[in-house]
Image (cartoon, rainbow, N blue to C red; front, top):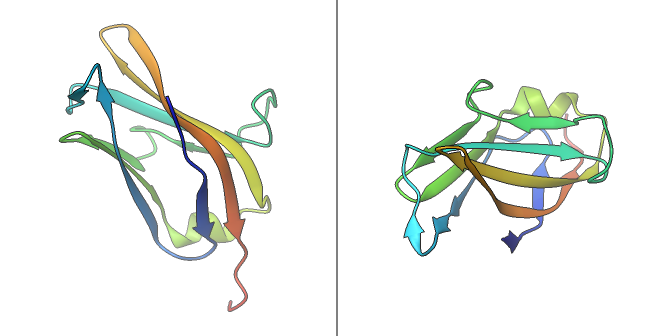
Amino acid sequence: MDKLDIVIPQGDTFSVAFPVTVDGVPIDDSWTAKAQVRTSPTASTVLHEWSVANSNITVDDGYIYLTVLPATSTAWKWVSGAYDLKITKAGNTYTALEGRIKINQAVTK
């Protein structure tokens, strides 16, 4: 599992791609992925979620892509949190990434 901190500019279109392998083999679109942000790993409230159901995460050709649209981040009242990114295939789940997320609050509105 890798650690990676993410900074998201509030109100901007944000997209990031992470290369992900399992046992040295790049993942493909047969894998699913989900990520959540919480104030801390033990917090019960989810601040944001990336998932296929939310149409803001994609798994393709060895990469996981996370996207945040401007309307989403503009509405956020939180400015930092912890996240992890889980990948799943055939009942096996792995934590691919974890870290902190910081929101750079917009000045220009």
